Image 1 (cartoon, one colour):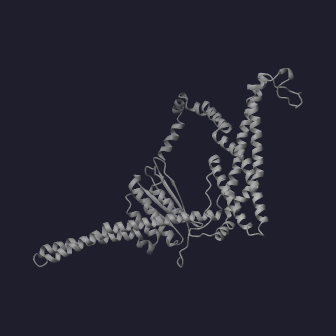
Image 2: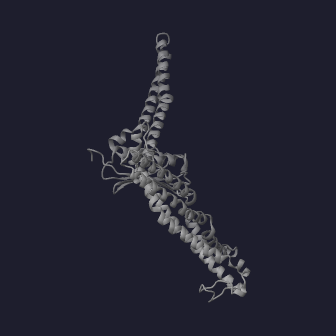
Image 3: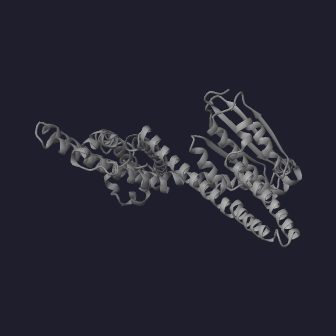
Length: 465
């Protein structure tokens, strides 16, 4: 807030405005600099790498689509005609698999030239399944095979349109743009030039000024063709993504499989942490306690005072071991969360934070245990980040329900700059929340403040209010 206010004050100060104008800052931003940016954008649209790649994609559409269409029509007609024999069905399956492979080529071409990453299809056969009949059954039930076939059949008309438009526009644009370089080679005695009536009459552009005017028209055509190519590429992206990409059901299955792997990895990491904490903490302390009590038992007869001191030390070790076990149990699932819900549990969590935390939980009833647990541990990790890294003076936790979502907002007035890159705690937190169809957004500019917003699906607790 302070940084924003000071920036606004400087921009409204006439003295500073004059200094910036004198240095050329504002002039560069609205005059020469703005014109340079406009010209750079126009050049990028006309002959930039994106336009050239997408134009090349449109030019390749026709030969690729023509080959796929001819193959699909020929192979499908032959295999369908032979269905009355024993070779028709295998031939049909081979045709579908071949068109599925062609879909892979088209996805690769779209990724290279259009910058469109399309996930590949799932394997036809599950692991452990083999055999001709199972393979043919999987091919005939594969949505990817049939969608690839539809793409091969319906892509040709669009390929003809996109190829024709790009060839026509680029040919006209480049011919007109380069006209000043070759118009003087024409024989003027034959009224050489561009004849508008097509029969040697009408206007004849055979002077340098007229040639430059033609070149200007070519430049305009090249600019318009750049935008047209981008529009054609958008249609191609829709076709490739819709017909060669995974279906909504397949995408959902892949997402669930990815989320399941995240949950499994997180659970395994939690088990390793619990085992390490038990081994290095309470277990080691209990071993030392047993040894101390054994030594006290041996000294009880010959040196009661020393034995009493050792028992006192063992009593202290018992207290520490119990505290470690309580902390470990709280890290697994705190009893206060089970008994009293999010409000008291988060208040107890906030009391252990190194900065003052204001907690506001406004829920009509308790959510499902899984959502409640995820919310608790998410807020716990975020408050640990506040304590360790933020250098904040205060923080707040707000939780409420809106529609079918549980909203969580954790903010602090610290230095900001929270890292959401791969490998950070926030990245892992994002994956764990996504595993239950939730979403997490982080706003943490340098200088602060930091705001973390999470949306979790609301699920009612069965049999409870």
